[in-house]
Length: 119
Image (cartoon, rainbow, N blue to C red; front, side, top):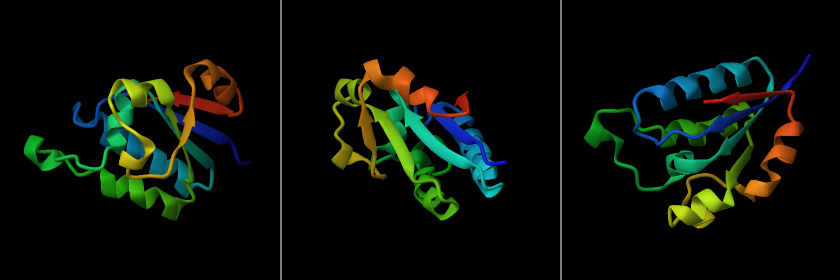
């Protein structure tokens, strides 16, 4: 039975190995033909910024993994509008096509999914 998963990404991109571990879980979930979507909040929106320099902090470049998610049929990416604005980003600055969601609409978005996983 297919479940709809929403992974909520709120960590900064170079805040330890958490992002990489979450991406591994997302890839595994999608590989088992589950429906996967991602929501980026707070510092999590920085994970989608185009010009990250992960090699300077000794971490893997996760941008390539995010872009490969489409191979696993992960096509829905939501970002909280206020988080983007607070960090001076616009959807055109991001590595994936995203749908902006206002903070007031986040709870309604989450109710659309069978499982919401905070990462």
